[in-house]
Amino acid sequence: MSRIEVLIRPIVTEKSTTLAEQGKYVFLVDKRANAQMIKEAVEEFFSVKVKKVNIGKVFGKKKRVRYNYTKTPTYKKAIVTLYPGYKIDLMHHV
Amino acid sequence: MEYKIKEKTNTKIVFETRNDKSEIEEAKRKAYKELSNKVRVPGFRKGKAPYEIGAPFVGEGRLLEDAVDFLMRKDLEEVLEKENIDPASRPDVKLEKVDENGLVLTFTVEFLPEVDVEIPEKIEIKFDKSGIDKEVEKKLKDLQNTFTEIKPVEREVKEGDLVDVEYKIQNVKNADWKNVSVEVGKKQFVGDFDEQVVGKKAGDEFEVKSENMTVSVRIVAVKEKNVPEIDDNLAKDAGFESLEDMKKSIEEEALKNRKLQLEEEKGNEALSILADKLETDLPEKLINEETDSRIKDLENRYMKYGVRMEDILKSEGKTLDEFKEDVKKSVIKDIKKDLILRDIIKKQNIKVTDEEIKEEFERFLDGQNIDKKKARLSDDAKRVIEDQLLRNKAISFLKERAIIKEGDD
Image 1 (cartoon, rainbow over the protein chains, first blue to last red):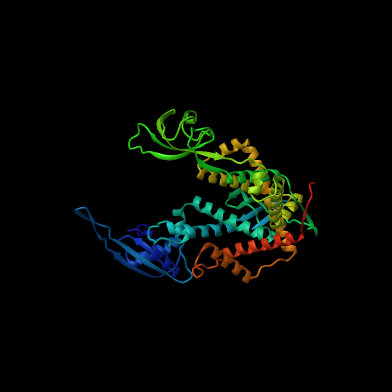
Image 2 (cartoon, rainbow over the protein chains, first blue to last red; image 1 turned 45 degrees about the vertical axis):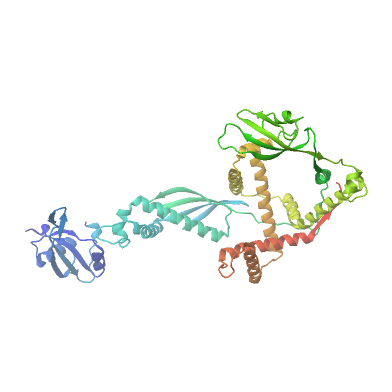
């Protein structure tokens, strides 16, 4: 798996924007990626230094469509903490 | 913001303002803050998305529009404060240029000029005697009417008699007999009733035909109207020596009334004389706006009575343009009066105390039958009352100086 495949897109929500103020950035990542891969990818693309990566799986929810059930997709997300002083300007990378 | 004055006259000021990029940006952020409550941005509750993320959802055009609007108001306020101007009508704004680098606006503001009126020690008011004859004549007619006797008679109907009749409209279901009193010869009833009734007696029945109906009529009673002549006899009945005497005393009475009225209105009269003399520039737009709104007002009032203004003007023999000109003149006069009063208030240092305002407010409440406990004196009401009191004081100041001048010239 190449590094370009790891990061899919940043997750922009109210929660993630508050986290960004603390130097924590949230990404939607490939489900096969691990913390080490994410760290390398972020450092390469945004030219920053990563302190810590927390990852988690967000499981899809069961939704009913009339008589049938479907599932919203499951994905992996990563909360990347940078060393103080580093910043990612998400607006210009999306 | 920078501004430069392009033109300044007694009543008008034209100026241009410039706002740079950062000011526009700031205004946009303010505009976004207000708009963001209405826009849904995915991932955020309403109004919680930061400007950078939410702005595209609001739309660049909308933001800019609101930002310009905001800057417009701010610029105007700032300049007016600096130049110490109180606008008299809605200012005109022209958008000269708006782009990434800045915003250029041109404002045209009208304001009321400061006037300097010299108030003479004595203001002479003419006492107008014209039209007194007509008043006297009217009074005599009234007297004649009050002394008119009506008595029932047993004879045939003549012209000028009062006839009590019962009538019923034919060919109408459930029509009842109705009573009415008719004066013969004055065309008060339908069709050719007046011609037919002459010569008939009480108890007679006949039919009157008009354009669209037939009416059965029954005469109930015939009454004679005894109109006294205007002569010495009438005067004696009314308690005077002779006709001449009566006329004289009525005229005196009328003159006295008129004088009393004038005495009461002295201040206003003096003000209106001063206003006629005053020559000053007045803001054109304000006059036009005021004229239009007054005409609209009148139109609405006539509409309530179901009359069209055009018809009334026609009956008075005036065109709309002429009428407008009249209204305009009175508007100009009113503005001038206002200016004079302001000047007087300023020069004579007329002031109103809080107690006076309170008193006036309570008097107003008494007049309107409003519970004093419920009503509260708001700042707006206070200002209105204060204004009114100041004006009243200024008018009474004029009243002291007004002198009524008698004579026919």
